[in-house]
Image 1: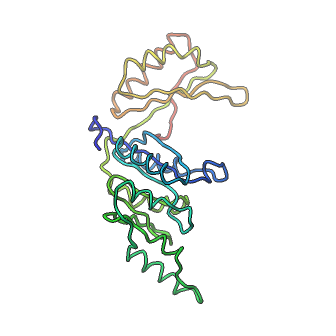
Image 2: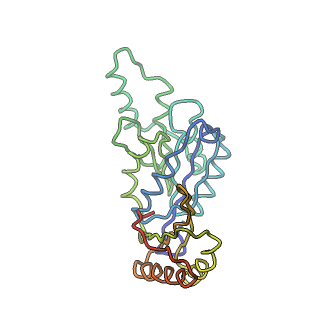
Image 3: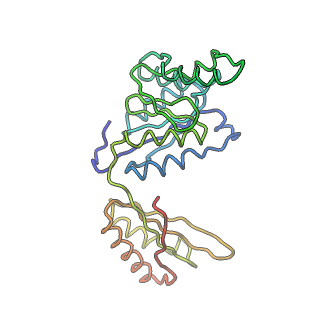
Length: 261
């Protein structure tokens, strides 16, 4: 699937697992994936969380992979009965699963290093890969994930997931990297800045302008984040926004250094 704007490459994240929806486990993978994709010029456009139900995973995956250039799934590729992501991905693509010999060899080597250990069916579950898929390896001691079509299936454990991401970046067709700049307004609420912010946003439809209020020890205001791909337009828009706000009587406004987001 290709996006209409050739400068923009999009992705979605599908977070899989009852433990996330129950609140027992806090997801941090979405943040890390968003930052990683941004560096490679890929916009994270949507994120969904689904339970360990095959039909739910398949439906969500098919919808996302049709709509976006890439889909990254996290979770559900471990050794237990409820780790069904590989099954669901294979079903979505209409292919079978098979035990990948490289993963089997890795597991066998690990078992051999542990006196008395024996490879069992649970271990073999982690070696299953859809026919036509390729491995996504990690730098940590864990079985690989895999990729098929425009889908990357990664582990849910954050340290393993981040290690797998390093084998994803070089496979992405990145677009123009989005950059951001931040204008900070102190002592004025959103109701005061809403109209000038809207006017500037309408004048620059190709950019993203967002307001993020803050309250800190009696100090209040908003961080206005401008995001776009044209750095010259972005710089000019920052100046325009500050001028418009000051014209509306907002005095305590300035640009601040902000991490790219």
